Every structure is written in structure tokens, then in C-alpha cells.
Length: 304
Image (cartoon, rainbow, N blue to C red; front, top):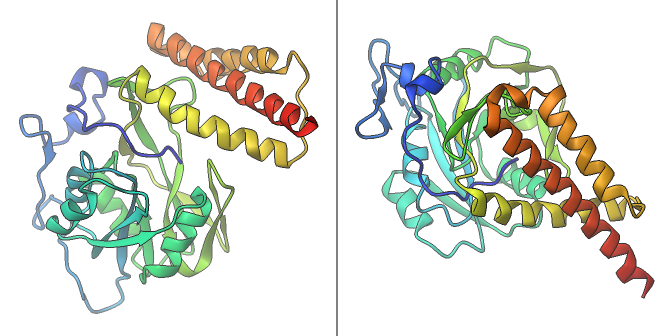
């Protein structure tokens, strides 16, 4: 999972995504917010305690220092039966205060790794379905209606993957592996668990479906944001490879970088995004090089 952390972004441009949020009649380009409604063609109404066969959907927002993002994220989830901000205990800003002001519950938990953190949320939050949404993501009205439709208790799927529209450096990015970028987010609580410390995946006791409507993901804000987050991820990834006993050769950081650059730019069609796609492919190649350099350093330190 891409961890939230970037500042609140401006509304995406309509010319870049005719099928994205600006194409929706519910997006207010002036206030940069979704228009929420429980009537007509708007969002499904928020109806806590609704009787009958409809299953409960609880939104869980994992967060660490997200005061700039949490308000708008929670607003886009107002249609759910319950909203919980699951806070990393290292949080020091006003995220908890702002979440409560928005009507959400707040739970604190000690972060060990991403899978452990998500599993803890699954254990502590009582619900039929849990919808995980990062603080730098927004659920559109179209996605809200689709979630309601597939959680009506009549389907065999125990989990649903959601595509994402990734805005990287302020631009919708469709190539280089950034779309459809399916993420396992809508989970039947008692039938799914998470594995892997970083880039976590689910293990589901049943079929996993795919939704059509995307989450809007305001990803890396700028180069500094990218480097800061990749610094964290490369350390974790290198540690995982080290634990698996993988020893890089002296040329591995460079060969992996070249391989990854080609994979992003050509195989995953990063070139479709022009210079933007080329730049992102280079940055992700840099990520691979740093990861394997860190892995080599771990082996050298072990030999001392």
C-alpha cells in the first residue's frame, strides 16, 4: 500500500481525466469537494443501524500525521455506516482532533509493519465489511454506489479490489504501471487477513472480485515527497530480501535498475504519458537501485 503523507492537492484537471472526478456532476471544482446527497442520484444515504439484510460497511482510514488530508477523505466517506481513523501511535499532529470533529471514531495502535497494522484494524473494528481508504484517497459517488451494490449480502465474493486514478506530481498517470493499480480494499471482515510487511497483500477465504469505479489517489506531491517515502520503503524492502537470504552481486543494483526502467517505460507503457512517464520510469528505476544497494550494505555489515 502507498502510505499517505502528501499535502492536500488541488482538483485534477478535466482535460487530463474526462472519466475522472471532474466529469462527475458531484465534483465541485470551486470548493474542491464532493457534493453529498442521500436522495436521487447522489451518494447513498448514511443510515446507521439500518435493519433488514443490508450488511454494514465501515470505512477505516489508516493514518500517520494526516491533518492536511483526513478531513476531505472522511467527507468522501460520509455515505458509510461508520468511519474509523486507525492512527499510528507515532502521530503527533491534529489528525485525531480533526477526525473527531468530522464525526469519525479514532483508534490508536502501535505500528510494526503494514500487514500487522491492517490486521489489527480488522480485529478491533466490528463490521460486516471493512472499506480501507488511505487519507490521500477519495471515494467518488460512483464508487460509493458500487460498494453498496456489492455488499448487499447476495454475492459470493469475500473481498473486492478497487482500481485507482493516481495523480503523481499533480498529473493523472495511466502508464508505467500506475493504472488500473488494483488495491484490495473492500473486505469481508471474518474472511480475509493481510500478509507481507510492505506492499501488503490479502489472503482471502473465498472469491475476490474487481470493482469498476476508481478511488482518486493524490499520490506523490513532488520530488521531495517521492524521495522521502521511497527512503522508507527501500529500507523495508531491503530488510525483507536480506531475511530471505538474497545476496546481490556487485552489478545487481544497476542491472535491476535497467530492467525496471524498461519494464515501466515499455512493458507497462509509461511512454504513453510522454516526458512524465519517462521521468517516473527513471525514478522507479532509481528506487530499485537504492533497494539493492541497501541490501548489499546489510550483507557487508553482517560480515564485519
